[in-house]
Each structure stands twice: as C-alpha cells, then as structure tokens.
Image (tube, rainbow over all chains, first blue to last red; front, side, top):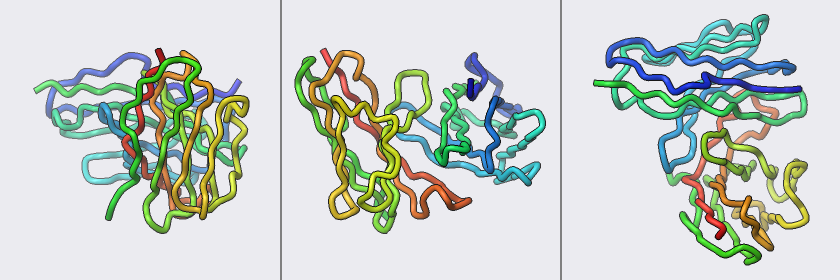
Length: 111
Length: 117
C-alpha cells in the first residue's frame, strides 16, 4: 500500500546542534516533495520544495535532500534554536494528481 | 497581504447537529483546499476547487459532508449531521497555480477546531 512515514518518535536536540528529520515513502514516484512547519493551533507553513531531479536544496539554515532511489528525503536544520521547535510535515505529489502529507515529526530544541 | 481566513476558530456541538465552516482564501488564488487533520496526523484532503469547480472530492464523505465555492472565492464546508468521529481540525488552504505547477506552495489558514459531544 502507499505510505509516507516520518520519524515516529519526537526529536529532542540541544540548541546549536543539527536536527535531521526523515521522510520515507513507498509506492509513489513524486515529481516533487515539500516540507512544511506547523506550530500548535496554527496551519502548516511552507518551507521548501525539492524536485525529483534535484539532490539538495538549501534555504538559510535549512537543507533538504531527495533520494528517489531510496525513496527518502532528509530535512536538516543547522545551528538549531528553541524557536525551531515545531512539528515538521513532509508532503509529496502522487500519480493521482494530489499532494499527500506525512504524519509529521515533533521537534523540540532544548536551550 | 492578508492570509487565509477561517471562521469560526472553535466550534463545539452535540452529535447529530449541523455545523458549517467558512474560508476566505488569499486574493487571486484560484485553487482552494479543505483538509481534515486529526491529532498527531498530517492534513488529509477532503476537497479541492479550481475556481468554482470541485476537481477532486473523492475523499469527501458525501453522505454527510458538502462544500461549495460560490463565485470562485469564499468557500463553505458543511457537516450534517455531525458524528463523534468528526471531531478534528478543519483546515482551509489556497494556492495560486493549482496542482500542475511545480511551485504549488499552499497557504493554510489557522483551522477550525471542531468538537462533537
């Protein structure tokens, strides 16, 4: 069956370290993958999009990789700050012309 | 620029009652989405509009859910009658290009938290 998985456990890291979040998928061949941030009581906010022919995309302290062979995307936050604490969602387009969201990973950056 | 506006922010109703949610997308955005989000899960698409046309409503439980987007701008999502399992956050989002664009960034509203007692 088609599935998107993200880190099943909440991620706790020390301030200043690099946070790495994982998004794995099966039975999809997405043309692109997106990452969103969601704070409690708010809607998701778009962060980055990476296309299938791109290996890596960067934006300030954020870096996303996309390995279509492994069917995996990694989302990195370097020099993490407590303000980065949130839930991070990956989303990918499917062959059925819609975007599917993963369950999200909760990140806590400890001062 | 104003973001996506949703109302109400919170709604508590008893089961079997009707409920309606309203969404005003970002000005100029042709594509509008309604999602349902359960605690600890990602948003799940209910319906997608391109202008006033519902182009994907395959996940909308049509026996009790209905939606409309008159004039291709504001949209209303209705549940009648509500069931206990409908308790969730209902998110509205909009985008400017639709699914065919490679830059299909979606802008989300704050959501409506529905509690069915």
